[in-house]
Image (cartoon, rainbow, N blue to C red):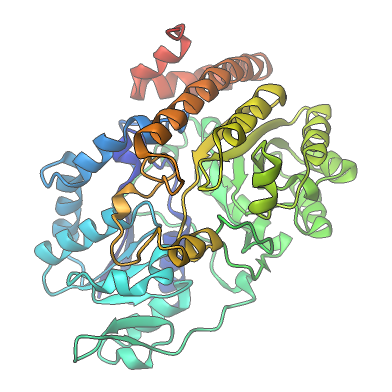
Length: 494
């Protein structure tokens, strides 16, 4: 049996790319290889292309939104030609496609190409969006199975029961009468150390770091825990948190170092410092490995002793969710942090020479122009090294989405998902007329981009002073792939 797991293209339609292997699909492939060694399984990252680099600022999701939608619906686009060629040449018996909300339309396009190219193959969709709205996935005749929840055990069990879907827990499929049939849910696997380390050398997706020529310019993404216990209204994360052991995380770090020479890591957990004693245990192990690392966390999950341990073990960068400068919005989104905590966390991280990047959101349906301006004003005053500004997007399985459905502003089954992402100007669920709302958002984005450009230039200068050789190698690599990055050093028009 031949199986192909596909991470659908999305960033590439914005002239960006995913430079690292897709974690979720690597986990599934590693699990299948361990438990079903007779199955040949490959991971294809269709969102990676050697000739592109990740965008430096996420305003690209707004400025290139129409480009994305045009390319998404253009069958002869080079991305779709590549997808078609890879599927045809590999000729899989089973095709699995992952789908977040933003990439769901692309995942359906991949399924359609797969059906056309390999009409006898079983086509399976999974991911967070499919789990939240399986009926929408199965509304496509190109999709045979929807995997609900995590895929390691479910997908493996499915491969063992291709003639008996009813026996596989945690899936949905079309019944003989045309309806959607659900099997019993699969319990969450608590001991996630049981899953194999997600390192897959794919014959299809080859990355620049695999030649070990410049390992110091690449960063490997690691997931040390799954889930988040907090209840922010815009977040669809699982509320049950399961942790990998510090030793298991260290095993992955050592395996990546041995395989590729990479010594820079980014821990993608929702809240890396959630469990302080565990994080400090990891820090003690990291300190022996001569690595540099970054993480995502909350301002109320940091204190002096934790930050000291983080710095000593190689932490260079921390991403924190600040979200808003509006007190009304902060209460409404249920973030449960204060501006005092934000300022204290930034001050503490800077005290120990750790770069701080903030996450912000504007455009919630209750926000006035003053609320959004308060967020921009906060960005101006905070001594952040960088930040990301997103447009509020009601993702399925969030309180935000549920509330908008209840109010009649969203109707599942009638949503154009190609308009749903963090840079789309179609995320207007407010009382403002569409054109007025778009002009407001564009104005706030322009203010933010001017601030961001100054902050990034200062941050790059600091990185150059700290690691001049690494900085120049990384900059040269990025500019060679995308000469347009030089425009960042030109003055902005007034």
